[in-house]
Image 1 (cartoon, rainbow, N blue to C red):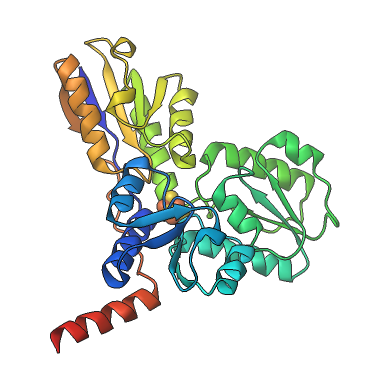
Image 2 (cartoon, rainbow, N blue to C red):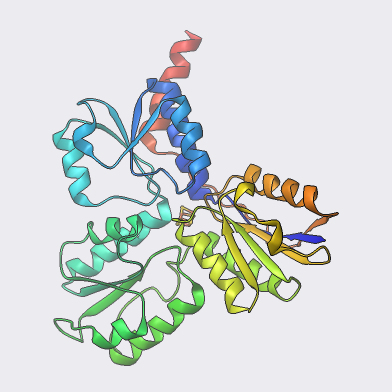
Length: 318
Ligand code: SF4
């Protein structure tokens, strides 16, 4: 069996930053620290952080006053921020800077009195965070049929933003339909789909010509992981989304197969290694990595955390 690893795959800069924020908060303030929603969509990451004292919750009422509360990488609505203020929580925002940029963009459109269309999946935490950060008329949709049915206040005053983890191809179709129906629509082209989502999808697209089967290592509720599986399916390749090696079935594979492996933006590399090891137990495998793009993007930690960290190390030195 030949195993070809997609490049890039796995952790993006927003996920690295979000995990580092929780780890630093635990070091600086001590456990427990509370995290609103799953910090990123991966069970392994959540278990590791839980073991160190992070408590993940959807319910702000369950958090004692004056506790440290971290907002997940997906971003939160204004209501959550206001509730956290009312509960006197010490807020640290781990919203990915690229999601925060979408919030700012959408707020700018709403302030101009435009109807804002969010191209994305209703109910996904990122979309709900973006929806909840806008004061004005908001529509959420992700299909051409929904574009056909869309009713807006004024077709001349409408704008769109997109969820960061969508399929490049599907979004282009929806966007074409929106621009066809509302030629005056304003928006950022496809730029809201983040660099990590695009790079991982493009890598799978490139890999598709060389493989018989695609494994995407990622959580079932991870949007970008599901989109990677869809890219494989669109290229008529059997594609499976697995959380870990234990989700694999030997019957999916044949010894002479070429198997591509990628991982969602919230998947630790150790899970990819576990999948490779499991295949190695069943078949004789050769493993190689495609050339691909090397990512260099990094994001700064929030200023409040950097300041507290500086004071902490200064106190230790004196
Ligand atoms: Fe940020 Fe993109 Fe990673 Fe989401 S997938 S956390 S938007 S870099």
